[in-house]
Length: 151
Image (cartoon, rainbow, N blue to C red):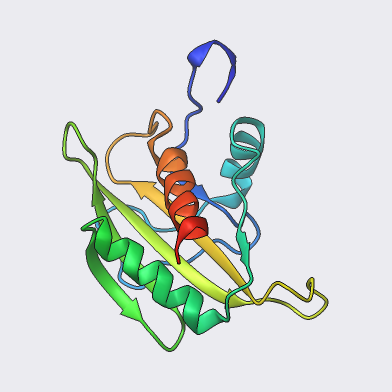
């Protein structure tokens, strides 16, 4: 977050700035990720948000992702089990705004550390407003924290 408690003019956060996850079903608001616009703002304000490298095989990682999505009671809007992608709708706690989330589990690329088998990429986008007040970054951090702790 920028100094002084100011939040950047962002409402679409992705852990992969070069290959942002793509929504399975088009959400009601603009689904196109604008990397050129978002990259400098996200890198400056949320430098910690990156894909999660995991030791689980991709299918196991995807099962863990689905379990957490369901535990959070997010409404599943799209599911591509073969492609290991899930799209869901999360409600904000206070005002009950709907935010769109898409999570992809990718096979780790050749040359990755021998213990890394999966890469989890996530994108969270607010439907309302041009600034999310940090809600999407917070959602991604919390989801990855729960994923790391998954049995």
